[in-house]
Image 1 (cartoon, rainbow, N blue to C red):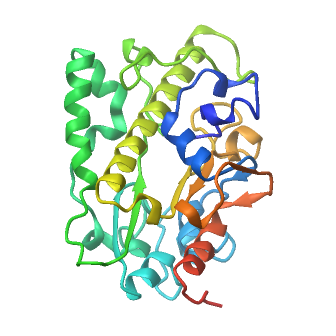
Image 2 (spheres, rainbow, N blue to C red; image 1 turned 180 degrees about the horizontal axis):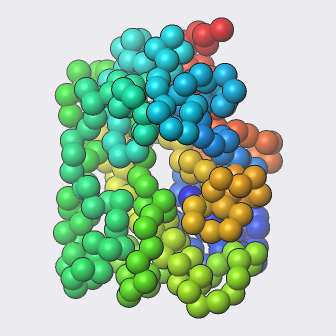
Length: 298
């Protein structure tokens, strides 16, 4: 997912953010900080770099494109937090493809309940039947994924939610006009060819981005339900720029590296700030450790 959210419309007018609707991302940005110049980590080691704060040249075999293997000697923030007493969990795309599966995040032992599996193909799932009926059924299934199961009383929680909606297959069909309860916006990046098939593809991407935002709303509701929203450091970000388009993912143009990024943490950070500093996602690991009061490995 690129830097496309309605919160950016006033900061970068004249682009897709003018027409997309992401109220839950906007809330996180409004009640916390919105960063206007974040960039993804370079391929192929992006998710390994987020876990370890190491770039692609220092991540060893974890940074390979094929036959990726995790090096257990490399510290990762999820396992450091787990060892400090956090109840950790993950769902959907975490660190993959690689061996062992999701090793820097505790592997399958830390996988959350396997519900809401249609999340990552929202438009295809909804388009297969009556939109409203299947959409309602979809969200009921999906809501179960954020029930904090197996959490020891009073334990701090670390959750990774990695939907792959915008990293999607495109099927030329009416689902391109569907979003979570509304029609997908009609807009695209001005640098792309303005022809019907690309407009439809881009609208499908924006519709899936809105599905991700709706899922974020479910997470916010669950955190409010258990009374932990303002006690949670919540970071919402893309993985890399949008895939499947010229100059997107795998290219070092803005479209391929810029991502949306917003951070909320109750009263621990001021609300409503817009930060112009250059930020990369490997900054997250040491930030999380510092927030938890843990020493950063050398």
